[in-house]
Image 1: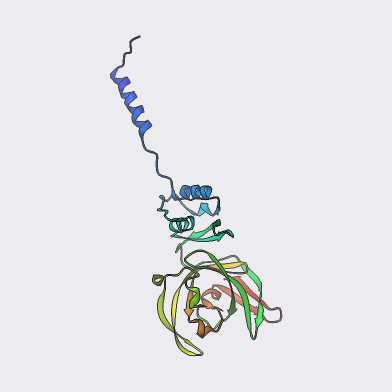
Image 2: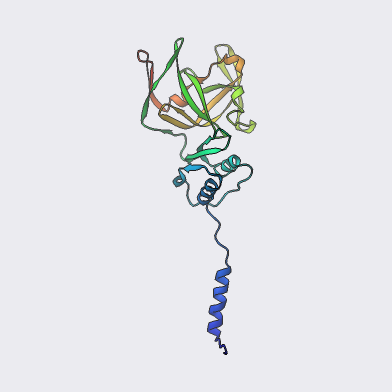
Amino acid sequence: MQWHMTRYGIGILLLCVLSSGATQAAPSLKEQLRGLSTQRGFSIEGLNRIGDEPPGNAEGNPINQVRHLLQDYNFVLTQTPTGGIDTVRIISRRGESGPKSSSTGAYIETRRVGAHHQVEATLIGPNSILKSVPLLVDTGATTIVLPTSMIQELGFVPEDLQEGTSQTASGTVPIKTGLLRIIRVGGVSATDVEVSFIADSKLMGNRLLGMSFLQRFKMTIDDAKNELILMAR
């Protein structure tokens, strides 16, 4: 049997060969994250908040890979008892339109500590790992105030913080200021919240919920009910 091929036929054949050998387009960041969650066995929420961005560089262990890929996003990472990733929840793109608060409002039960009201808060720093801490509601504090021993726990590094001073009841003290990615109290939360770190010895165990968070809401304290009411502005 003899084969005959025209110039037209040769052109078609070459086109098919070239097409079959073409490289596939690189996955998007969204696809990359979806693949990582499947590979590592954790759930991921909020992928719809990510557009068709190109893939990122993912290096190190799974937690570091997630941090690298989502460095431009606010997200929450919860861990398993063995230190693996359980869930990643993407909140928003960082700096999308300035500081934000979410939810319409909340009625939060407080615990009395002397004349002060104390609430449980969830803090998320640069390492995106949840940290639950009790905070005293203090409208006289300009920012969230935490002891310097928590700097490392929340994942702050020196370049995340600025040196400064603050006037307290004990006089002028040195502080370091930065931004918490997210803080949640009851059913409300806010992103990019200013925090000040002061030496543990100066705070004497106190941690303060100040105006950098409270001013995002219409705030009422009900002394009779031991309740903090935060409503959207």
